[in-house]
Image (cartoon, rainbow, N blue to C red; front, side, top):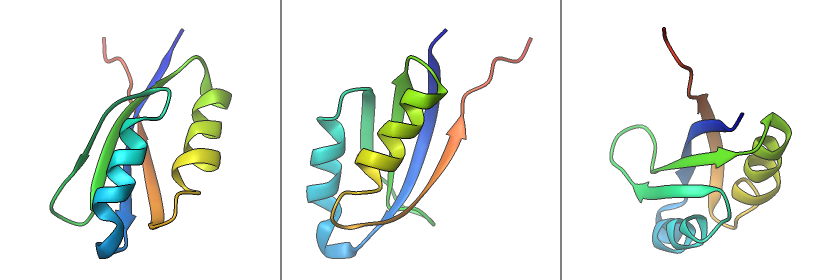
Length: 79
């Protein structure tokens, strides 16, 4: 079963466009946008399992030059 999440991230102002462009090209990222509010960007991501999701966030998104921090919100089914 695939795992989906919204990854919210803060970036340095001079890196926003560059970071969003890189995130949009990452495997597993379905959408990524710059946003207003307490966060500077948001990505909707999908992974095969929680381990793969962690690798995407920790090894790829958080390691981009310009990303200050991230917050991950897992998508849950409510039935």
